Image (cartoon, rainbow, N blue to C red; front, top):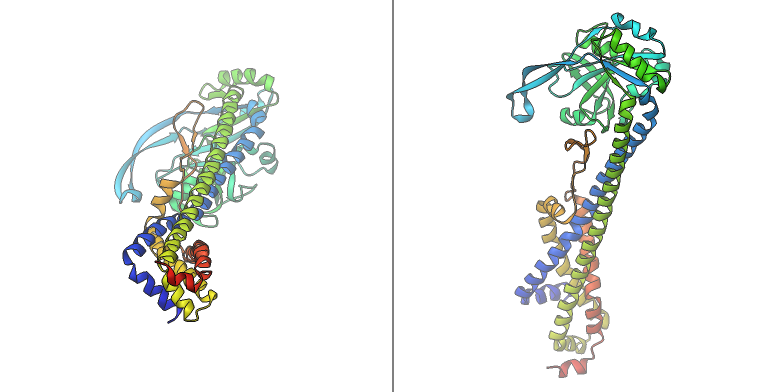
Length: 439
């Protein structure tokens, strides 16, 4: 009778015990199959958050000085109700508040450049397009390469895919990440706005003050919104931070329609934002360490439990079958045969448990990962002191794949062999005469 036949017969003779052992082993093996890939995925998620936060902090830090010399002059907004067919909610008719930015002729405000101590005036256009269910259009001038070089803050920050806008770009857009996810758009795709096709050249990651922008050239934005030659906002840069207050006062006096805000007054807020970013980076780092530490502990417990279950079960089996071992050796079975017999039984039990574990993992991998691994959502406040903000981490979980199945079976074979090795050696070293006297 071969090793395989004897192993199956011995397991089948003790069905209840084998079933209990298989259930216990399957629970331990389920953790070993589910946890490692989910730890990797969760760690990757957190690293992505840390990279996004760090990139944003670097960008904000690099623009603090420039922001101190900036005066923002906008023309306010109007609000109107509109309805659209919202496919995200089962094609139901939904009402939305559209923010309409007031616009003026750029030519009528050309005098801003002539105000003493003003170094540059950059017109921009922000408009909410009714046909665009989510997000708004943001147009920036791209007709001057030196302007983009000296004032990079007018361009999208934190490009995570593709490239940023460049001088003389036309017919291309940058999508904010959340907007790209909503519309399932990637770099290189065509994005249609109000019947006009644009090529997506980049995806912008989370910002300190986050919204769902479609950023394009000012000319394209004007053509799209029928506001040719107009702007909704003027970015006014002063030659020296000491002159910001006097320039702002003069702008208010000469252009009373402009709602003026000084960049200098926003520097403290920027510093608060940087502090929040650093705190969130530390939080994300702690989360990643917690995931790895918890995962390591849980995997270690599962490995120890798996080996211990097999070890004690096989030790009991050796003791219970001492006379059988003696009979086999008396009939000429070698130590190698006895050793292989018990190791194979341990491996077979472990493989059977692995099959059960794979079934459990296939249906409950995500649930188990949520229960066993930390998965806090990291929220970046939309402004200092705000309780609301943009979610920066959408947790993903790994599923059971063919690779995981092979890995799980491999782990089962290894742990089954390790757990049954000592009992198998003990059985192989049993002397026939002593075994035959055993009661």
